[in-house]
Amino acid sequence: MKLVADLHIHSHFSRATSKDLTFEHLHKWAQIKGVQVVATGDIAHPGWLQEMHAKLEAAEDGLFRLKEELASAIREQTPAACRTPVRFLLGGEISNIYKRGGKTRKIHNIVFAPSLDAVERLQTRLERIGNIRADGRPILGLDSRDLLEIVLEVDDRCHLIPAHIWTPWFAMLGSMSGFDSVEECFADLTPHIFALETGLSSDPPMNWRVSNLDRYTLVSNSDAHSPQKLAREATLFDTELAYDALFAALRTGDPERFLGTVEFFPEEGKYHLDGHRKCGVCWEPTTTLAHNGICPQCGKVVTVGVMHRVEVLADRAPGEKPARTHPYYSLVPLPEVLSEVHGVGASSRAVDQEYYKLLHRLGSELYILRHAPLQEIAAAGGMRLAEGIGRMRAGQVDMAPGYDGEYGVVHVLGGSTPQIDLFAGLIPSPRTVAPPNRYRKSSSQRR
Ligand SMILES: [Zn+2]
Ligand SMILES: [Zn+2]
Image 1: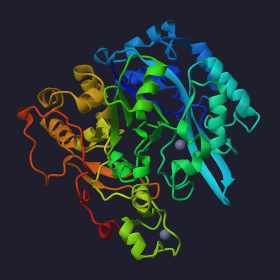
Image 2 (image 1 turned 135 degrees about the vertical axis):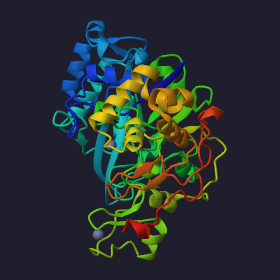
Image 3 (image 1 turned 90 degrees about the horizontal axis):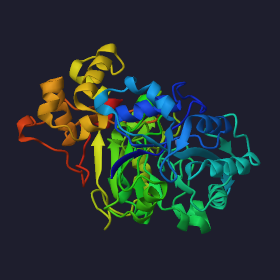
Image 4 (image 1 turned 30 degrees about the vertical axis):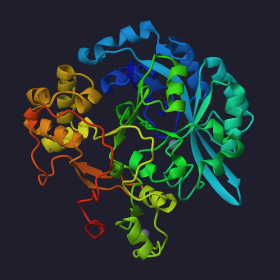
């Protein structure tokens, strides 16, 4: 069964997240977005565990669903064309902050459990180490390797995936926070790591350049802090609906069962290039090196982004590929496409109305972005929308890359690219190599 999964999100117990991150809203938004398996988020938090007990019931092995009385009470809030069963998988993020080798490491890891009992045992173990009640994503003074040991002791069906591995401040390979390899981070327990989360600022081709990541399956998730951000990145499966089947697909990377990922254009991520947001300095890695990493505005060291960090660890040239790769599909969120088509803000009323109109007519957001025939999109939302989605599927976008915490901007209606022939029936094809030099704006224009 083909499944879209989003395995890294947060609950309302995490700092700086939406009050709407409840199981009811997640159940509804998973359908709107087109996701069948969504992580619960925040499995280290006792309050969230209470809500799991109160609102979820066991479904297939290791998976859960919203209780029927709760689901039926909100059924009408989901457009009929989007309605689909939703399963929850128990998984959440932990922030590990610790010293190793004389350096402070700050690393985020996502942890998964097959049962509520396992979650309870995990919380008991973690509560001895630090405060798990203050934040849905607890900060623990615990080595990532030792967290993995606890996870494996709690239940041998528990798993750990390092989160958004390239982000500068909180990641396994982060320039300011991490290590240079998986082995350095997880030491003797490295064989238990089988998948890595690429994060919003990197895509598979960037990861392919580092050969010591070849054996890991690359996953993508939304890291959503509100239900509306669900599935902005996601992981694609063709397996039975069961906890062990999903992880077996990730462990083996079997291309029949693990179908790849849905991605942001990595330039949209907040840490793609280098620079200083406050100083308006945005640099590609070579420019940063030419300035010895020093910001000309404030004289301090610039924040080194994901592109630069990849360049430092890479042992393959851009465009080179390992023997084993999986497909990936680069998308722009539908509200952003609509914002461009209609020339109004992505969170405006006009975009919201148009968004729901399309959901009612065509189906879920991911269906519209990935699969809906362009003729049908044109009929439901107009030629400009169809053209924008056609360009996005073909990778014909203009971008201003993100840097130093500032999200990048991607335009699908740039005007300089050739017209998409709507009636050629363009269907999305996986992108297998990164197009060379995708930046339309030079770093000097950004300053
Ligand atoms: Zn994180
Ligand atoms: Zn500066």
